[in-house]
Image (cartoon, rainbow, N blue to C red; front, side, top):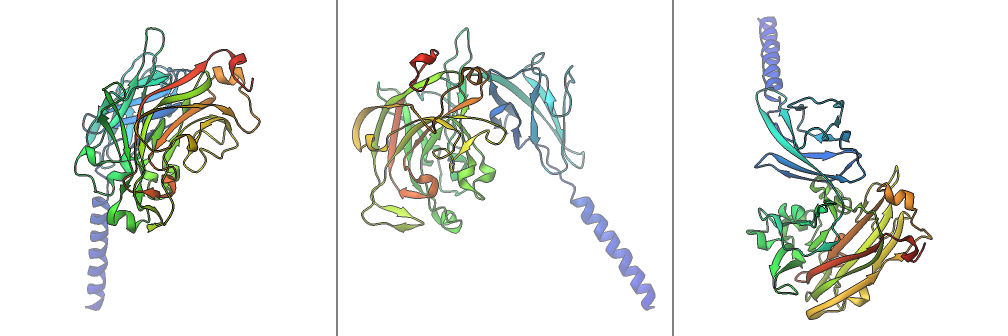
Length: 379
């Protein structure tokens, strides 16, 4: 009798294990992210199943390396196979945009994404008039394209990280928003340092500075390593001379560090541009390396030149050579140098230090540049 019960129990366990294994098959069919040698930025619209993929103008559109971040067990294939397609390399020269079908691990669900490749340069003027989306938060893009060159780019912010706090009820509650009252009466950017509430206290990320930058924000890294969640820079093909624009700034009342008020310390905003050289080990600078990396070639920054002001005030920072480096024209032509532009309502916001309520307005930003190496100070 005991032996029969033992066999029955074993059969039941096997049956339950089999059911659990079947239930564990993933039903998700989605693209969660994109990476690759050529990819500088990507923007996924999960409602429309579209992806905007940004690569340097130096990339070969017939051989675009894409590594898709998919749910466990999911697979992906182009809807139409083209000449030149192979493992993780796709031809966008003969067809752009392209459709890709994602199939879930259990095979029961699928989704077709339309991927548009943008082979682009960085815009050189930023007016902040246009949003690519206002839900659930404001997403900025600039398009300064002409007949001869495409200059279109999505700007990144820490808004996706702030979304995790569930503190925002409307798009205007986020740290980085578009606002009225720009220099010429149009739109501008408003960056505000925000309290992250109980969620922020739990993960020891007590504030979120309003920020906007050239690059991307990897929300999957936000809780594990917040500084590495920000990836600064996009290929730049000119000699940078100055970073210019207009700002207004008011510091919040109480400066805090690690959630504790620091008496006598006042918050500062930050605006800077950083040109750096990429290599096999460095493809992007992040919050921990953007001002300290030995790959930095030139820096435009002056914290002392950004006092509080209730009225629009112009700033103009020269790109100063760093680390004894100069610009190699051959590397410049190949897109090996990248330029990052960063705006923050709290200069040490990446370390979760700053004052809640600190507010920085930015408008009419221009990257002064030249194609003549003799006009660049270190050449």
